[in-house]
Length: 542
Image 1 (cartoon, rainbow, N blue to C red):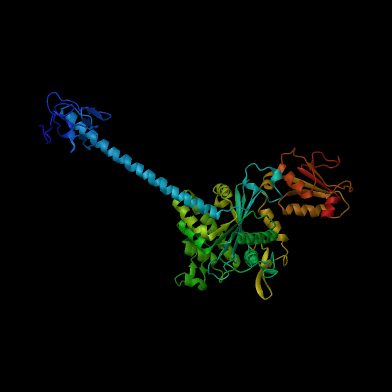
Image 2: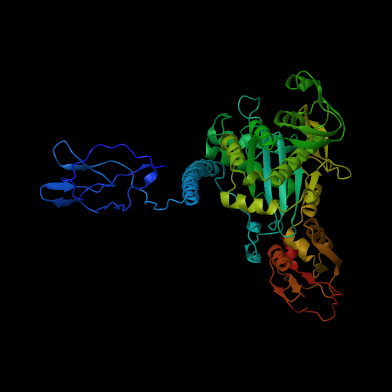
């Protein structure tokens, strides 16, 4: 059945195309010999009449001229009248419209993702560069390190000092009550967390507070001296850098290792970091009961029951802060366990590949974290750490049995922590730390070293051997050289340059150039990789 669309009569004599053929609905043309509409690509003038590009009808304008009908471009007329063909064509048109709408929706979605992603990237870029300002450096972050770039033993590791403060309105907002060194060995893909007792009594880097104080005051001492006043806001970057310099130097003095970078985190950043990953699971060795913190635990003095416990940011913060019913040494163990659990959760969840999680972390870190790590170095460290499983992360403390290198005491009627070797005597601590956090290149080459005394200074070989052992060298035979008239120290490299890092460190330490031939043929190396004959220069420096 042919339903004809109603239309107004048209003056065929005025039409430039002659008599109009009636058009039916759905774009089909009536009549036995349909005439296809002619579509001009530009206005055409016929006599006094001007026509515009139209689809199928040219309509007179009020002025007598013909104006275009504002309609969509006509679909190509379909000439078939077969029902099946018509049905298929209608179906095709329907899906064409659906696909067009779907494509538009997809384009809108992609545009939204690009815009939102751009905003996140812009926000992330600004916040990242607000947090990661740079300043520290570690040669060991580079692949295939040139030995000449290493200053001395320990340069083959990356040591990051982690400082936790109360911040804000807390009492003593800049006291670093959490102090740990995260030490990464990029050569052997291992790492360690070493706790520093907050109450360790040390010589201050300046006399702003006093000459001697607990080590947790070193950061604020340097910062406040720069500012000339006490200010817990941590908004002045130069003052923060002064604080970093003060605390880094103090820690290096105690541990005997270089500090490459420093990170300062307040309670809010720590709590938010845990909440961002959802929670952390801690294996609590014994029940932690602390009525002094019940106020923060809904009145419950049991901060954590024994066994595996899932903790949100608030619970984790209580767990690492509690110290009144346990020792400060036990608290440092709890801090290390939470940090390792947090590290594992971050890497397992892929938090650092989730733009929303990164945005949440950066929003908090932007105002609550300060560091001298550059963005480039932070990225390099992340690449290293993500490949180090927790079972390759050592958890170390200076009071963890059997390594009891510190003990409690009093100074000026103040409860303190001091070395078991004696006040300000850090020799045992340094030897333990250097050997436990051994330089990656020394550990990898593991060269056997023979040390001979070529002078009349008694015990010189043993003294040098003791020093080298404290840095993690493998010292073999120690004794006297056949002759004792050496003025200059001789280092003989019998590896043919294979153990280039050990050779560099020894030359740097003993201020002597390595040779390949033993000057005295009567000296038998007995399998040693290096033979050191000490001269008078070594005796004088000792």
